[in-house]
Length: 135
Length: 178
Image 1 (cartoon, rainbow over the protein chains, first blue to last red):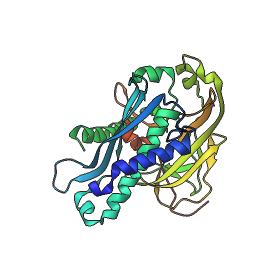
Image 2: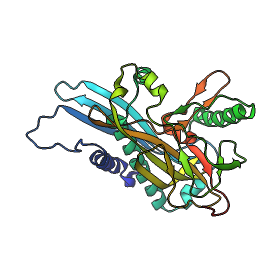
Image 3: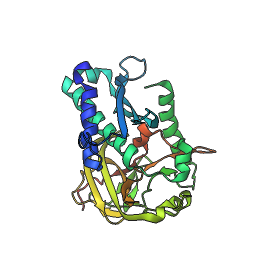
Image 4: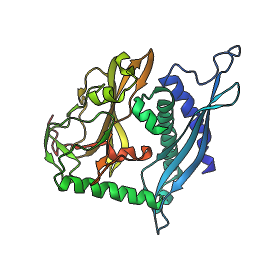
């Protein structure tokens, strides 16, 4: 699992999505611009998950935590956690298939979760009632 | 997969089938834009899946903003919506899972689209749609659409990481009729 380098892939996916989908740069524009907010994205956990059974169906699961932090005083302005859950396959299938399948699934997880993250933080419009319900 | 999550999946499927089987006339609750009736031959053995009359189906959905969006917009912000277009995605399904993204369109000006490249015959697909629009000078989207279900007393919506269970389902005909 460690060889998959999921945190690195996920960080790259988030930067790519930020550039593609918003006018927000993934990095600072220039060193002269003061940073007002910092987007912190952390991979909390990843791996295969499933019930305790014989030859259980296992899904690739990736959970990330996003925080938008005000740089001046470290106040958290926004926080959200998202989870990707892939298609369940029997343990035997994961074992029988070569590592490329696991890598493909990890890359898909990173790509889809990065897209959801950018949508959620920068693009998603929720009407007032739904925003209130989320709080 | 936790025990609670497995119970959730079983409950979702059972209650959805039960609500349809008992002739529940209420529309299924949904997040995002709902699909409108498709041209179809009939229902498949899976009562949530519609069998299409073409491998290049015409998909229709609700226009944004809907009356319910305006009603929920207590701050009146949606009055400033400009240039709403639609994004559409279609996946080949394996079971309930969107296994492969086979078709995607963005910038659709109307809430209707005829699939331009034929889908594979006799295949289950999942699809969803959302609106993209300008609001106060910023690009915004609403949530990808998916269906929830009615229980006997309340509305159930899948958790976000399982929203694909509610993507709209369609099955192409056995022949390549276009």
